[in-house]
Each structure stands twice: as C-alpha cells, then as structure tokens.
Length: 189
Image: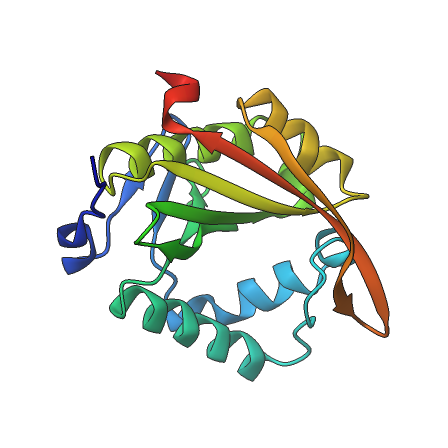
C-alpha cells in the first residue's frame, strides 16, 4: 500500500498546542529572538551549521522557513511558552520526503528552558502531527555524535539508532561523524 502525504495540511499553517506550549509560524518580528537563540553558545554548539551574526541572517532564515512551507517541503514552528507568551525555541520537519512518507526533524531550545520537559512535550506533539495529519510513515533525526542530551531525548521518545556515519559531514574545516535516529509509526502504535 502506497502512503500519500496529506498535502491539505499545507493550505494554512497548522497551529499546534500542548499542555504548557503552543506552536506557530515564525513572524518577521521574531528575528531578534531567533538571532539570540541560534547564536547562543550552548545552543549552537552542536548545530553544525553557520551561526547567525546579524538580524538579517535570521530574517532570511525565517523567510526560508516560510518558503519551505509554501512549497510543501517543510514546516518549522516557533515554540511559545504559554505562561510568558515568548518564543523559547523551535522545531520542525525540515525535509519532507513525500515519496517515502518520511520527515527529517530538528529542534532547538533556549538553555533557560532546558530540563523542564518542554522538548519532550514538543516532540511528542510533532510526532502525533506528522503521523496523524501528514500521514508520515517515519521520522529521521540527524544528530551530532557529541550531543548526548539530544540522543537521550530521541531514545526516550522511542527513536532507534539507525546508522552511524563516519566523517560524512564537512563543517567548519573538518569532517564530522553523525548518528541517524529513526521512529516508525508502528513503533508507537
């Protein structure tokens, strides 16, 4: 049986909610907050991507998030703490492989909010959305091998280590290893 991605979900940006958080599209007015988040040393340590230095960098990133959504290629939500109504991170399905009904996820959270269960709450919301609303068959997550917190989170949520790639990614003048984690819809049914 061939799985089909539910394209109707992309018609309007899906607003999601969990017990303590709600999730919405980034606004251009979030550019400074995103700059502060992505340039924070503790957050950027394992990102293996260029660190924004100016607000224009994050404005372009937000535009890229919007374009990916408009083209049905990905969805990125800002994570908003309900009690303060401020953005504290983001998460999304960066790449949607429609043919194989697979989505690659990514996420970041400001260190002031680490250890409170927010990312567990967030990723659980994402998992349900992708499997139930997008009709995904599986998720994948590409993790820096030194990011122990991210690996522990994924394992706690039922992801399995699928692959370890040696020096498969070139960043900042060096080749890096990466680990690929996977969650199948059948893993949680």
